[in-house]
Image (cartoon, rainbow, N blue to C red; front, side, top):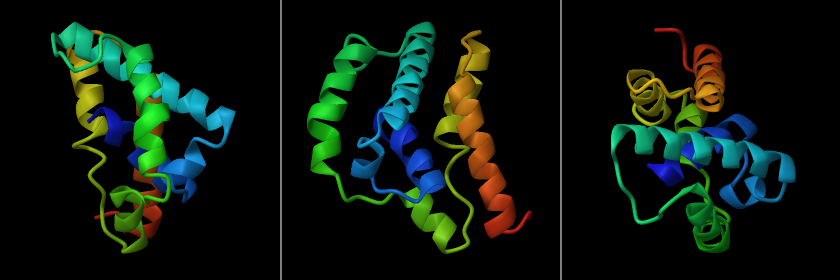
Length: 127
């Protein structure tokens, strides 16, 4: 979930591979905020992961995970290209709902979800 909630929607919005996203410090800043929000929600909800904090995960994320999937195009992007609704409610939407339940703000994730839903409205129909 850490990986997919960070990369899938942003890759879809910008029509970029995972590696391209990491090529811009502006986009890295957005991804870092998403990761930090995710860790804050996980901490508040009592979930644990292999990494102690967002910074530790970011080292693995940028140092290993992203390089290994540099050319990957997200399933969210592929769904939009096919005119299908995406899994955004299951991924980032779930994180937002969990954040609300535990009173943790998730403004970056909320903006990303709204952008994906807007794209879906236009490219996938409103139904």
